[in-house]
Amino acid sequence: MGPQAIPTLQYPCEHCPLRPLKVFRNFEEQELAFVATFKKGELAVEKGVTVLLEGSHSAHLYTVLSGWGFRYKLLSDGRRQILNYVMPGDLIGLQGSLTGEMQHSVEALSPMLLCVFERDRLMELYRNHPGLAYDITWIASREEQMLDENLLSVGRRTALERAAYLIAFLLERARGVSLISAGSAEIPITQQHVADTLGLSLVHTNKTLRKLASRKLIAWNGGCTVLDGEGLKRVARWEGLSMQGRPLV
Image 1 (cartoon, one colour):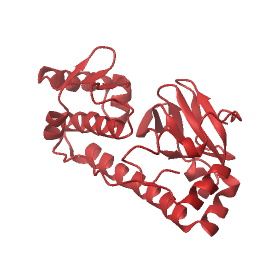
Image 2 (tube, rainbow, N blue to C red; image 1 turned 60 degrees about the horizontal axis):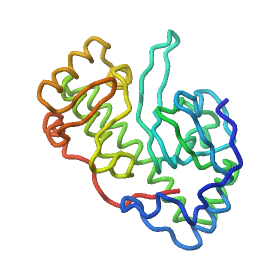
Image 3 (tube, rainbow, N blue to C red; image 1 turned 60 degrees about the vertical axis):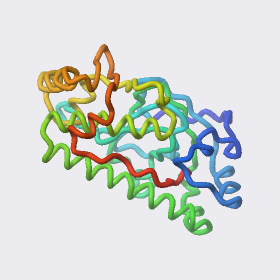
């Protein structure tokens, strides 16, 4: 089981700190009113806590309000594959709501604050608020799109291209939701996280990251500092993220 929801409400939906960000579309008045009743509280999660566990049944959905996390699966011998990273505005737990149980786990990469929603009211959303239902479908489709790109990396990019893509991708996503300011480029991942995302050994990962550092694209001192995001995109042969407005539930 994941952590239990704490019924606090520091950020009512009407005053959500994410809504003013340009990356998110505006809500209709009636949509905002529904989401305000859909939300049941906020949950503070410490770094390293498992928010959702593969095979579990959760009564809640969560939207990330602040902090970093990651989705992952484990093999029976403990080997881990990181599937994707979650940031403010991302919805987690939808899979468990639609299939009955979670098919992956979610862990906090940093302290996180989550908006808590009752899973049982999801069908009410689909029945009465088609705009919000479309938003949830859009979010699921976007997650599939990101997984497609990650699979392309693991299957066809070289190790150097994989690492460059991952770091550039995380940087652009984080800046879009103000998780990293324009004057900062610190990404709170370890080399083990990189290895588990890219499907490389830790030794190979270390050598690959040192190559990026030798090109003055990153610096690695216990964490990743991006020195040249555009240079990383060129190495990865990646054009960057689309800046179209995205939903926020």
